[in-house]
Image (cartoon, rainbow, N blue to C red; front, side):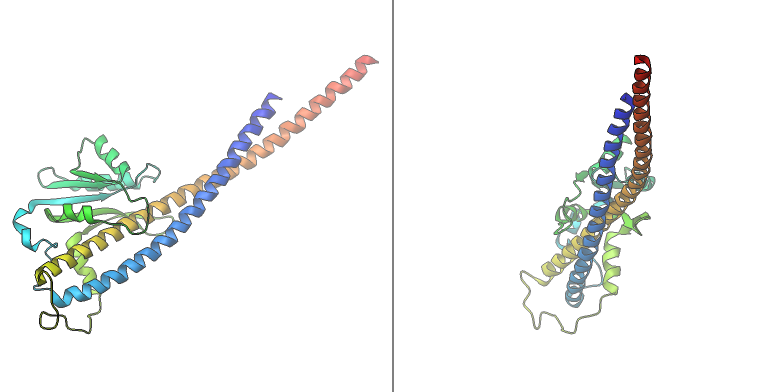
Length: 282
């Protein structure tokens, strides 16, 4: 009887796991669809900004939106590492940290990490980042302004992030931030209107407007990188939940079979006891 109760308890526990993993699969799938739509809208906004920027820019260089304060730039490369907030992300965070640290040199680089899991992994390797940020909880209206403030302090910036390939494959990618913005701009169709000081008034100045546009486009690009990283994390969770769901389903089937067998055995034993009792009474 005790074995029957234990099997029943395990069966109920695994049944809950099956339900939970199924729910998490659905949530991850929904998040993936939402982020794809968000990235599409963000890309369209970037294109509009680039058309304006391309017509009023005063030279061919990308100045990180810091034309007025270039003398304060730190002569180092900033590494931005985008990781998950928790540890439930497979091995992709570990792979990202490992790849970034292969390039990292204390005298040449500073690190900014996004995501608590990445911070923990760096601390385990005795690497202290310059700053750390939480991964945004929401997928809409992500602001990268605090990151851009850090980016503007440095000579160059490289971002390491998790890239979504498919539901079963996620990879590590890197981008040079200024190069990535400029490359995106090459694919944008030029605007028809001519924007210049002859037909527009720029306040406080043309240079300030150009700087603002550069900062805005870097924010959009970084926000999209964070969204893609979250997309990869959701895909990784979906994969993990699918595997967990499948295993839990198999365990539940096995426990159901064990439960029915133990229940039948319990009934048989009870019947034997009754029959033996009747024979003893005779």
